Each structure stands twice: as C-alpha cells, then as structure tokens.
Image (cartoon, rainbow, N blue to C red; front, side):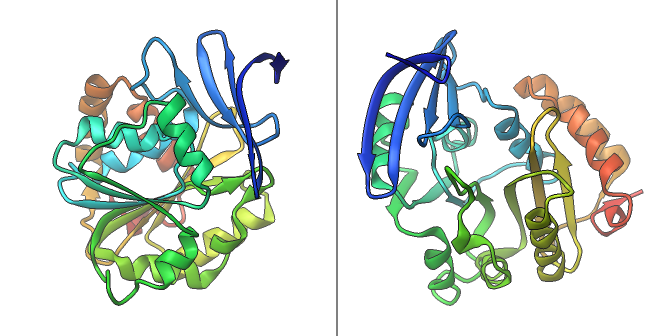
Length: 269
C-alpha cells in the first residue's frame, strides 16, 4: 500500500490517533496521520541526522563544548536526536519524556532506538513532568531539548509562559534550552513563544530559521552560560562541521543574521 508518496510498511492506532511508518527512496519516516514527517531515518546510514530541522537542533554545540552529564528531552518521535546524543557523547545520561507509548514502541522497532543504560524513557506529558519536578530536579540538567508536536502543531501543554519558567528551574545555572518551533517568524504562536522565552531567560535567546522549512530552532541560555567571542564561534563552527558533516558554519551565519537586536546578550562581538 502506498501513502504520502511512499510505501506504507506499518500502521497502528492509539487514543491519540494514527501512527504510520512510510518508506520512500531509502528513507523511513514516521507520520501521525498526515503528510508532515515527524521523524526520518536514512536506511543506509541510520545514525545520520536526515531532517534539516533536527540537524539545526545540534547548533547548541556551537555554544557548549560537550555533553558529559544529564539532558532532558521532551518529545521522542523516531528518536533521531536521542540516538545522535547517545552515539556522539558517551558520558551523557538522557531522560526522554514521550506522551505516547506507541511512539516509543515504533522508535525501537522501526527506527533503531537502542536499549541503553544511559537512556531512560518515561511515558508522560512533558509539560506536566517538568512542572511537577521544579523542586526535586532543580538545576539538574545541562541541556533541555523540546520537540513536542502532534499532527496539528505544537503540543498545547507547552504553549504557555509557566512551562518555560519551569524549564529554567530544571536547568543548571549555565544550562541551555533548545526548542523546535514551527510556523515562521510571522506566525503568532512563534511570536508569543519568543516573548515567553525572552522574558524567562532575560533575553539571552537566539533563533535559527531552518532553510526551506517552516521550522525555527530557539536557543535559550541560563544566567551563567558563558559568552563566546565571534572569533571563537567561527573557529568552533569550522571544527564541528569537519567532525560531524553538519552545516555549523551556515548555522552561525544565520544566527548572526537573524538576531541583531539581542545577539550581544549571548555573543561577544
């Protein structure tokens, strides 16, 4: 059976709708009952980050040299970002919060999400999990990644100011938050989230539009996150691009281009 211009290899249903796995031209993708892909994997190179927006979420590496402690991931999808972190950062410990148990099963059965002692997957609402642990897990995470979408858009539970305030409380004082946003700079929801992030993180925020996509990656820095010189960032972008074959030089140029009003809060000229 063919669907979304590819071959349907798996389909299931849960209380939140349809889950489909499609293969096309050597790429396997997860869909939530609609054409947009929630996650994709290159079958000949499963560890490579295939989707442009997931690659852009690695832009945190420009500002943080490594991940050798704990990170919190809200939203699993096919597990591309989680697999990338496990593969490249052997000392990391990841906690992933995914609302749909069916998604976790598919990530393991069809997208190669490993059983790894460094990885703990929890079935829960990401926003509720964060809000309930502002005291018990205060200042616990060096990094937080948020990529929580359903077939209609950003999950409503994370679309409020209180959620981002709670995220900041879970981050270490020098921690970073990385979020995938959708809809473009003119989208009212993006503008609202950008205001919430700016207010929560004292305007130490940067945004990276993903070329030819509606995604925008937001980077938010906690109060003790260091400032980096532009010279050091350019050098790091060259090194990272050689190491990972990801477009870090372009990401840095786009960050500088699109954040002129706030860039001095996060980058030394």
